[in-house]
Length: 465
Image (cartoon, rainbow, N blue to C red; front, side, top):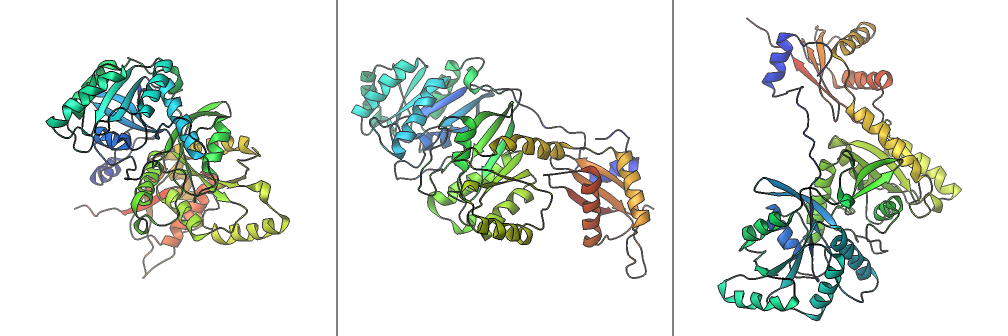
């Protein structure tokens, strides 16, 4: 935890509140990728949820809810793999559907194993046969999944799918779980020992969540950074429904970006697919190390913008503000924007702000240095000796005010954890919130912590007999 050993009574106090300062997060090795593909509404996302054991992918009776390549960490019988949900594959598609099809074809080419889903109740369609031809060109191992086999009577319909030429069809019911365990056993037999180069982790890329209101340019920024159409972009707000993972090289370093669904209202006020998309966005923020919050600089900072920033800060992630659509700014708008930033974001002066244009590429190269600075602060650990010497100087120069005839003393301080930095101050009595804000402000001035929230908690030392 630090360069200096903790006093016994401090270690005992930390143990009482369940803090192990020496615990480090495990880093996982890269895992093979299993892509789930098929035409719209055959039950791909339902099968993904069944394999994961939770409702992670957005599911609705309307075709076309999933539009991007969305990855999830999964495991079976102790073997880890990355499960990739895709949008419905349709030949001769146009508009947004064409972009969705391109994403699905990319998954077919680059995954380690493909689960090709067919609706048994409908049988093999012309679209299924065209998808099979694409799969054969990809030269990726394919497992044919006959979905919606809810009972033994439907198994004969599944046998008819031998005609597709992909080998044995494996009957499952994604909705009820029938046959899913046998299918996963087959998946494990087909997985390679190591993933393809395309999806390999590059030395543990830092995880970045792109968050913001709908239509602020999150997917456009991801595509600009990736130099390819990684996320589906459309003028219709709410195009992205599921969080979309992409390993992208920015500033000479690999990063794992997560493009999230735009949050237009509080989770409790949303409904249907929007409700579950909001939950997944919240989960993506929790799983990330840093949140890049996009604001539309050409529009007034809204209450929802402030709520999203607060959500990222309160989740304990490092933060960078990206003011997008700077190419649409006028002189008048810049004047009013400065006033809005002073008024609405006064509580987070420590957050870095960069002015970008995802459309033109303006200043997107400044994103990587800002993220590195924020993550360095997020990872920072202050040695215990240095922290206590600094705190003694602060307390001597600016002692805590006397309250009810008593003046609490600061006995000891230690950093309990990083990511975000969390400090515990042991005292002889209650510390005012105003005094804690003063300590935080001075801590940022002397130790940095640019772009990272910090947590300071107070624990009154118990009187020992």
